[in-house]
Image (cartoon, rainbow, N blue to C red; front, top):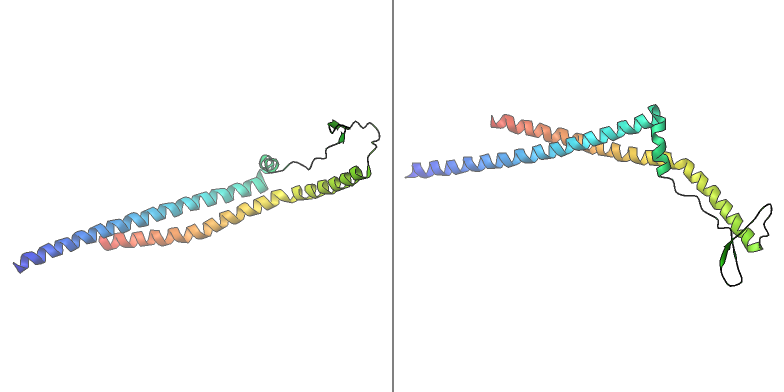
Length: 159
């Protein structure tokens, strides 16, 4: 009787060990696959960023203009007596009130600020993208290597 109990207990332990190893294998392969996908995505994005910056510089123009906002608009309108808005019709000169002249000065300053921001926008977008891609690679590469090595170690110990 004790021999039979020992064999059944040992068989249960072996079955548990096999199940546990299978779960570990699935986990390590899954994490390795996810890390590998992160590596591929990050590498492709860094490569695309480099190519559009230094090799195919015109390919980046669409992205650049797509991210630009519209310049601040200055409505050239006058108010009629009844409160209706009428477009101002200026040929050579416009008779502007002091308030309208002040608004025009503010608009000119806003427009200059907008132009300056648009000059730095493409570089800022590229740097933000590079930071994202490099951080993804810094996380994904060690994650992949550690999990892949652990998977190989598990496979060798099972064999």
